[in-house]
Image (cartoon, rainbow, N blue to C red; front, side):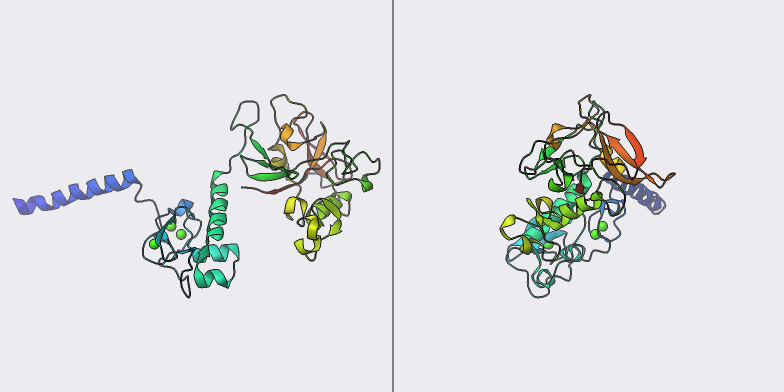
Length: 312
Ligand SMILES: [Ca+2]
Ligand SMILES: [Ca+2]
Ligand SMILES: [Ca+2]
């Protein structure tokens, strides 16, 4: 009797284990076996323990030096950082992704490297498509960085803040645009190549912050000396937003202009996007911050622009 029941008992046990496994999600695919599911694992083929450090793990440095998924730290043993925090990336993989040098490879990833990478991972995972400002979707939320930039807390994108038309330091009251700061609210640019539109980005990315006359294209921050960092607010990757990104900052609650005041002076008028009109290549899309509409115009039209960088 016992011999006949055994396979049946085994089947019951197997079904029970399968049920528990499915309920706990334990069967979700984790191809590199690092405890982070493939769907949210940013780094495939993680090896534990990893090939870093090459010499020894530095005092405040992190790496996966034993068999578990928690980073070891200096001589202190296990740290509080796990592979779940780094989206499944080992120190070695972080070094490769971040383009870091041999020092990290010899002694492990520094606290700053880990912190920056984890923040980037968090930013990516947390990026949210904002609502319309009129009660639908996530609430519009912005942070004034106090340096001529504002961050959209939903998308993570950083935007340029404009100077008012009366601003004296930026010479915004000067009738000749060539004498004004590129940040002046009423500056107008065409979309086409070789245009002031290119001058605009060229200045944001290659002139010293706060002094738009010093060129720091070659030497970066070193060329700027006491005039601050190279690039607007110290960043050199400013772009013109594509049309959907530009529309993401429209506030449809009925405000005029249709944008949060954190963005500083904004005209109730048309702002260029990067996006060409596919059916009429001489045209490109713009957003009207007078009513929130998306329109297209001739690339030779003189419209306003607001720069953007980074993102989730
Ligand atoms: Ca994994
Ligand atoms: Ca460990
Ligand atoms: Ca991994």
